[in-house]
Length: 217
Image 1 (cartoon, rainbow, N blue to C red):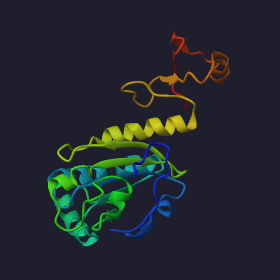
Image 2: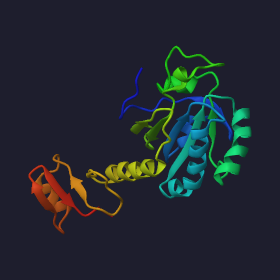
Image 3: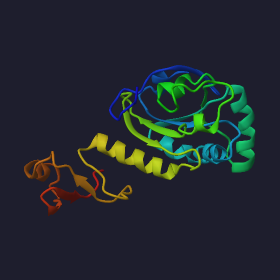
Image 4: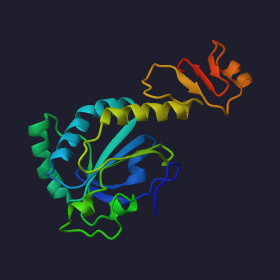
């Protein structure tokens, strides 16, 4: 069953490099980024896990936990972590889920439902490079899926998180290529009268359906 934005993130219990967790309980009252990988000891994934380790303080500032997943046992993850630190300059500082039986991958529709554990082909693994942004309410707020050959832009994941968190606090949307601190969009669901009360400092009306305002604090 496909997961859609707005759905409750499926809960699960799994072994990780930091012990056994129950996903919803682990999230607690924070936000979470769940990101998956096709297999341990693979080149693109090695660069991704290392980069995320370096970026973790930025997620911490945003009250957000990060957790990885790879379709291999936790024992392999721990051995792989040494390579990641050696080649990328950052030790993995967040849990990585062991999913050798593909339970979580299938639960999140990251892989073909007929795929099996053990020896897998590239075709079986191809879809498992996904990102899920989950809110404190355990709802899926955003998803990104990349092909196996393309390393993810985790700076973009951070920007996406900033946008989603801002929208959760204020009734606003963010325009193309938006970055924190830039003007935002007032959704059409907010009338001009409501907008005047909400933004007494004023806002710009480019078209009746396109109104911008300084980013709320």
